[in-house]
Every structure is written in C-alpha cells, then in structure tokens.
Image (cartoon, rainbow, N blue to C red; front, side, top):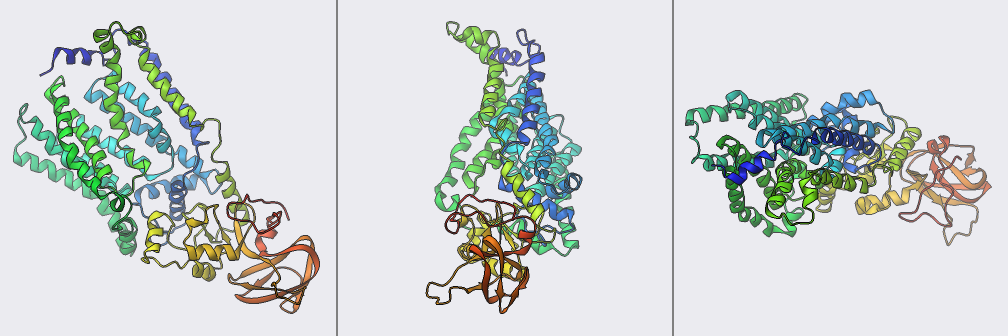
Length: 591
C-alpha cells in the first residue's frame, strides 16, 4: 500500500530521526515562547466587543439574572455559565476581562494538546510536537483564541472529539464519549451543526474509501455505535433545555439561541447566493485528496483516520464558505488546528525532499541542516510580534472606561451601551445592538423603543461612540439631544442656550425628557439663580417637561447635567467653542 518514497517521508517525521535530535530542546523552548507571548498578549491585545458582551452575560449569571430572559444573548449558554465562578473569584474591577482571558489558557492548552495527540496518532510523535508549536504561534489562531469568547471552549471540545474518535478502536463507549463531547459543543455554540454536518459527510465518505482495504462493521454493530453516539449527543443539550424549561424561560431561550440568529436574506446569502455552488464543486477534489492520503499511509487504519480528519476539516471549511451568512474570524478557529496538522508533515519532510530531488539548490545546506523547520516557527514569532501586542497596550482605553463606570455609577444604575461594553451594569434596552439586531430593527421586526426605555428607567448614563450610526436613527437623535459628554461616558443633560428670537437675555428654557436628579453648572463661577420660579440652591429632581432657569451668577456656558456625575468628580468642561461634534475627543476633569 505504501510506496518507497512514502516510507522515506514517514521516517523523516519521526523525532528519533538523525538530524532532529536538537529538536528535543528546541521544541520545549518554543513552547515556553508560546506561553510567554500568550501571557503578555492577554494584558495588551485590544479588546473585542464580543468579549465584553460575553462578560456582561457572565456578570448576569453572577447576579442571579437568567440568560435570555433577564439578559439578552444570542449564543448558547454553557460557556457563560461555566465562566461565572471565575468572574466571582476575579470580582468587578476594570481588569476583570484581562483576568478572564487568562482563564482561557487551559482551553488554549487543551487545544494544543489535542492537536499534538492528533499529530501523534496520524503521523508521529515528532509531527505532534511541531504541530503544537506551529499551531500555538499561528497568528490567526493565536490572536483570536486569545480573546474571552465561547469559541475557545467550542474549538477545544471539537479537537478533543477528534482525538477520542481517532485514538483507538471504535467501540460503543468511544462513540458515546464522542457524542457527549459534540453535545457539549452544541451547548456552547450552535455553529456545531456545521461540524456535525462535516462529520456527517466525512464518516460515510471515509467508509466508502476504506471498503477496498478493510471490511465494514456489521449493520447491527454500526447501528449500536450510532445509537451510543446519538444518546451522548443529546445528553447535555437536553439537560440545558430542561433547566430553562424548569425556569419558565423556554421561549426566551429558543428565541435568543436560535430564532434571533435566523434572518432570511442576511449577509452573504443576499449578496452572493451563487456561492452555494462552491460546495458541490469542491467535493470531487476532497474525494481525491482523501483517497491520496489513504493510499500513502503506512497502514489502512492510519490511512482511514487521516482521510476522516482531512474530510472533516475540508468539508467544514467548504460548508462555512458556501452556506454561512456571516463569516467572522472566530468561525475559522476549528479549522486552523487541522490545517496546521496536515501542513506540518510537509514542513518536516521538505529538507529531505529538497536534498534528494534538488541537490544543487543554494538553500540546500540550510535545509539539510534542519535549520528550516525552526525558521518556520521563528517566522510565526515575527508575525505575532508584528501584531504589536507585546509592547503596545490596546486595553488601556477599555480599562479606563470600566474604571469610570465603577467610579461614576452605583451597581443598580442602568447604562445604555451597544452590547454590554460597561459589563457590570444593567442595560435599559433588552436587545444588544449587534448586526442581527440592527437589521431586525431596520426591517421593523424589533421596534426601536430605546428612547422610551431610557425615559422609563431614568437612565442617566450612555456611551455614544465616535460613530453614532451604530445606534438606530431614532435612538441616535434622542441620545445626542439629551446627553452630554463627561469624559469617556455621556450623562443625561444638555447645553442650555437662549432661543434666537428671545427678548429675555436672562432666561434659559429647556425640556427635560429623562427624569432624574439634575444640577446646573457654568463654565466659570458658582451657579445661582431661579429654577422654575424657586431659588436654585443645588441639585434637584426634575420631571419630564418644560423648565426655566434664570441665572444670577455664573459665567460662560451653562449646562444641565446629571447631579451624580458632578458629585463624583465628572464635568462637561473643558469644551471647544461649540458643542462637541461626533468623534470629538472627550475630556474628564474634576469639577
């Protein structure tokens, strides 16, 4: 079954091969570099909005709030529920997200370990060692898996599933374990349906390819394997569903985890409908590739496993690119380890191939001395360093924002943000304003009731980003008219100005729409005067409606502002010569 050249190649994938002994200390060195880079980057890599959204949901669990019913989310719940004890240990502080990232290290390690085991099972121990090195430093995987997100656990479970599936003889117990792992992955992310579909294609295709080399198990035995896997598959999801049904939250769970994410004509479905033809077009190539892998393997058993993993990875990628409506970088996390798994043997045998087939090549000395292999890892290190995460702190602004939130607000103060960026405070509007929600609002499927919710809850704090088009038009206008900048946050208030046609130079007429406790500050001097006909002596609760203020002291511009902001050291000054425009740098100073 195996050609002479294939045998030679296989021997050069062994860690005991002559010329590879120096790798015994090189590989651990690279492992140490991976760990060091990971630790440093956790404290410096810029924070993605998905991370704060996930952490806000975890915060909800720690406060007895039920996901989907009390805190909106459009992901499966298991990751957030399992992360709650870690957040309780870390506490509500600005650096919490960084420490939660460190909590992802075991998942990162599990993924690398699983990739190592797959390399050992499918090729050799030498391949397994280098797979873990190359994967750990692979930029696309390194940076995305660094973030606090459900996909970290999802990817680790997928790799562990493949390890269990390929590291031994197929039994009912092994099939049950595979089912449990996949069922757990479903409870972490519904994108597991793509992985299941990939296995659903890979398994029968591999069996067809293996027919000429080994007999198939009997129908009865195959049926028992399938039943064991199905039983394991449904175990964890049924437990999750049962929990939400018992809590009376079946409908919120169903909507948040499934229905909210299903929107016809979304994204690539609408823009590139013809891409669905890509999937059947590449299937003959995948068949050919799997067949080649099977025939070049040292045994039919290893060949079958290689073909199965190759097809699982390739079919997943083809299905993702062909059918998934919104492609994000985290969707590729389950694919990267398997890509590196099959690239690594080629990297390891390249020096031998070049010295055999291209002896006159100038680079032959470097390749023959096995310098090329560690150079690949060094190249990855350079790419990771080029990302700037080792010395440039991309978390500073986000940490400062959370510090302002914790200093300015009480635990019960609601804050209007997009997706839970303020993490440790309730949101007045139920839905997070990510792409799907905004599209549903645009289509009229979800009403834009943000202004009404801000009024009803007396929400005094909001985050109006530099690009306010992230908010729906109606909400955007309301926020701009009824909130003022006080640094990284916006609080209820407005710049007081005289009407252009006013004949009274000493009276400000303004309308309050968000009921709360307000104070009036001036650009210069202490403020005194008459508010709604009574002497103004300080902060006062103002109800919605028209109000009048006649100052008797204070100079420059006057601002109506949420009193708690002033009392806690926040101020709308200094400003430029006019009201801040969108994207203007914000300032904070003691009043």
